[in-house]
Image (cartoon, rainbow, N blue to C red; front, side, top):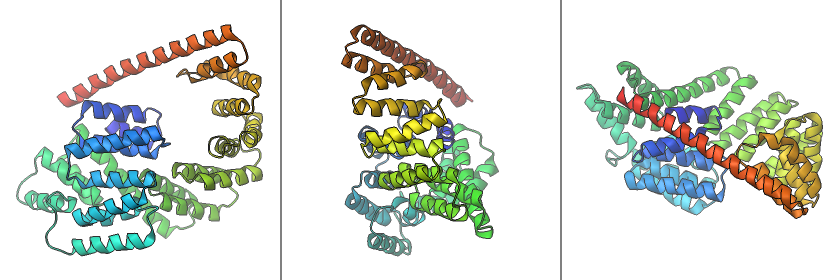
Length: 407
């Protein structure tokens, strides 16, 4: 889990594979399943990945039916699927179940839910929080109960992990870190919470820095990055807009803003921003690529996409993704020979078989049966090699996990 979480935070391509391995090695871990579910729904969600996310949440609920974080994950999934009435209903239930947890995380859980409904949920949670009794499964109850135990005797390793988890979920990061530091625990579970807690504390320190130095563009960009990592896209949007207000002619900030909008599934606005910015900065490869890809994938406008993607390759001929997108756009415009020409130039970079599969399909369309057969055979070979690499990697990682557990 620690490796997967670090890879996700740094944008490593292996993050999903690492999260899945964490679930495979600890199938009864609610935390592992929910972390994978959140990763799947927040990174280029598709019907397939959202279905997989839903399956992980359902499995987590079977393991821990009363865990508030399971309900919180279901809220995030409902919002992602644009099922806002379901999200609102789940959030109301969560407010009654664990008021303190709901209040601490409401901004991240409620994007897209109508403001009046959010206020009503907040009122419900505030009323419940004011009452002396709380659900025995709530994070606030666990935090309070284990806090009282801790004042009388040292917590066991399992109790310690539960206390730190409760503190983290309630945004009581300093208390979580103090407990972790006091016992100097170095097991994988403790290191996982050390990483998450330090990251959250870093965000809070940065927020204080920005309040003291409001014109610091790097600080606003870091805050935006923290907001994205906790799925608070409303806050990320505000931080990028502030950075752009300070530095309005910076194409790199524009590019980061467009990519954030894509991550937040605000495709229409992302497309508008990208095309406007690419027009303003015609020699910026990144902005032109985003404009071209959005035109191709979201707007289904291959003709407009070609304009931007051809411009990208004039600027940076080595951008493989732009060349593949351009090939797809050509194919949609029935310029199949041009599509083939583009993919042939980057076929050597194919690491999953998809480029050779394109070639096989397009060769067949243009009556080049022999070349189609060769391309299909290459596609099959590359997929087999990829599967072999992943199997070896999985065995090696499993061995490392066993060594860590033995320690």
